[in-house]
Image 1 (cartoon, rainbow, N blue to C red):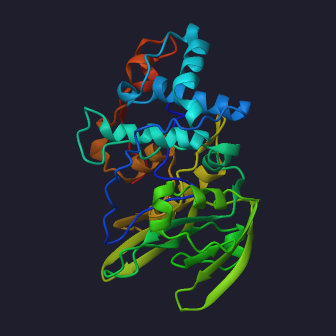
Image 2 (image 1 turned 180 degrees about the horizontal axis):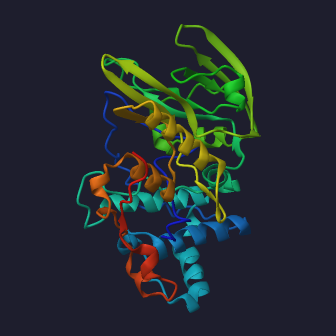
Image 3 (image 1 turned 120 degrees about the vertical axis):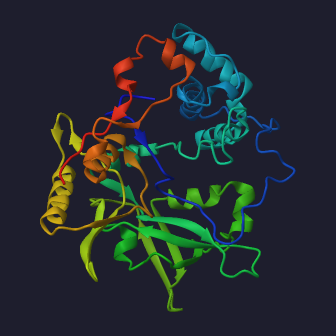
Length: 355
């Protein structure tokens, strides 16, 4: 969808990631999420209208699932006509741009060429305020500093509780001594934050809470203690390498590090400080002669493709140099339009770095 150096991929929402344990997510109920509710229109907010229309237009123009997105897009010269058509026929029925994006992502589950059960768009997000791109670029990030997910407490429970998945160092959540695994009992006094209450709303209530400038959160710690505290939105510097160490186990030396994002290894035409931190870490592993490597990506929110390439070239055996690492797939519009550059979307090959 963009050049190799600027394209970013995301493994989940930065602010909010949902997953489950033991119990499978229920099938959609009788209210088909791909059917637009046209009982109300939302046209009073001009700025939001423009954002809603743009989300729909560029999803159609750039995504790999464009075949199943309604309306036949015009040439670029008629973009304004397309945007008016999109608003009149689709986006006026959605209150927020996030709802438009959720709807379009739902449609991808019905793509006729889907090869696998989970081959649909999990990844696209709307980055209001550029907090995600700032994090990817290795600059200051902002927010409350926590991600959450749903877990089933026991096999006999037909519901799931809301738990903290990860905490960013330097954030308000970190200063409040919140930890991965803490169960969230209430947010701003609201206790209806469990899965069964939030699923029909597409978790919109939780998203709204985590987008606020401040919240009061009540959690149950893993030792059973109850903690109630205030969290505030703030800017903070977060190092993607959360921790690293060398583990000696019998005759093995295992290099281990936690990587919380694929932050960019470049800043303009120069390498970023994160690049040199990675270089230093791998040099340390090589000097100490590790023979196994574990990169912990459990809480990784995604990031810059070039960083993923760098890591792959660090990890891959030397005999893979010159072989294909990955390829791009683009839709018909990107292939037709003049700004499409074959070199930007050429297959990427391994080029081994280090030992």
